Image (cartoon, rainbow, N blue to C red; front, side, top):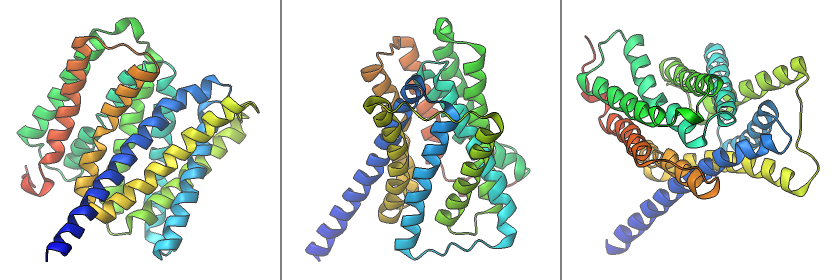
Length: 302
């Protein structure tokens, strides 16, 4: 019995470390993304490389786990539309990094879990719970504190890109949760990734914006690093879900904005005032608090 208990504890600990590795990996991908563009590439090309890396890892994971690649016809259009939202949101987030300090851009984007909750309320025709409204108000207040004390760093394109990223990703999540909740998550994610790659390549061909990084060690390494860390995060997330469950993995992934902001301060020399750090803490606390309360505990009807 003791051996079984110790084995279960070590398995859970490994699962926590795996989810933590996913948060660290995606944070590094965030940090590397603006550097890739500054080295001579562009947002669309980076997005294409990230999707290719993501799909390679996803396909390998599905092959090893025995997951079928066959998608029922009734789920194709929802996957396609959700994939478009995901691609637009991912591209807009990368673009926002070029105009805003990365720490502020990631905070604006990180409101998407709360926006997703509000979207679910609208879709299910139920009034948001008071707790949900309070969490949203807390997050917006935190953002106002951050942005209010940092207007010297802000510009309209960056703000619009960050808001568009949050709205697009939340819309993709709402649609996926409503129309795709009965299919295997990895299969759903794979076809959303395929859609994202197709949309990105179509945009590149239409605008003739293909811009791979220069054939230099630093530029190529940055592109490889941003793509591989993005794909590795996907693998670690699903591995973590298999070991400790989706809820615990999702809660650990809430460390992503904390780690991204920390890395931005450490590696990019971004400075946040005490007021901005307080505002950032308010945003993160509001999102985490909203996720701590299960959806099943909330009123289902207005």
